[in-house]
Length: 372
Image (cartoon, rainbow, N blue to C red):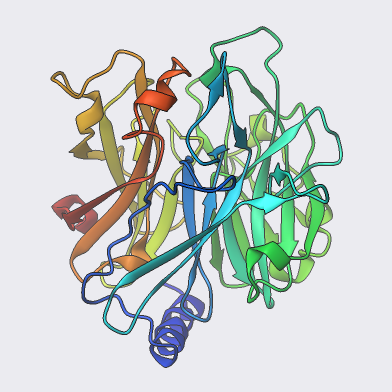
């Protein structure tokens, strides 16, 4: 573990204490659907959490259903491509979460992060705080070349970064700047998980080739004003090389995931990765561990089987689950806390199956495999 991580965790704990943020008591995350007004939050996926220095968490949500109720016309749900949540824990340990759905100049619901090209859209992913700014990785998405079922009808088309310099304000008042990172065509776009260590931010990328391994890139914190020019990747020879050539990169995890969390646990002296089994329609949540950020990573142990995917009364043939990730800033000692999201291949079911398509929270004793 680096001195920067030790100092950062200690500083975050002190800051949290100063504002009354508490990991004790009943502060368990939950994501209830809202009702009753035109901009009510009706569910979303993604659910990356980013701790802020003042003890709050920023929650990044993907495709977000909104309105007084869930609405689907044909196979088109009423949604935006990103929304935000801000959470905190009160002095008594109670959980507080406020959703933010952005509105455009005409007062209509809009995505929080919008590319210049209207043909594309962003899925906001992980993020990090550095230099007084909040940074969010943005995965560029476009319609699939060949039509697919709604839940799969997309292709990736690059990665950008968003910078928010006034994250202490409500997201409605955020000032967002955009920076290109990796252009379309590379087939590996840094966004899956972001980690600040020493003087760099490390951003992991799923390589859309072969067994779809996870690769590593990094940007010096001093170069974030021009992230594309300062991007480096870890080569197969173990050297950091300027630019990004996935075919020449070292494989960090043989079978990666589009979304996952990679976080350091100082009490274990281990890095932990939480993700869903990359096999589609899998019910398995995996835990991988490594003594170093660049590995070697374990293949992963099954720590949880998702009830929605198991045979029985809760099983629906159209349901699939994904977006597994850990939230260590909300864990008690000896606990592993993570979320996942279930969706449906049959879009109209979103209106009748209101027990899916929002983050599900799971709390477990820290598995023995985390100590390896």
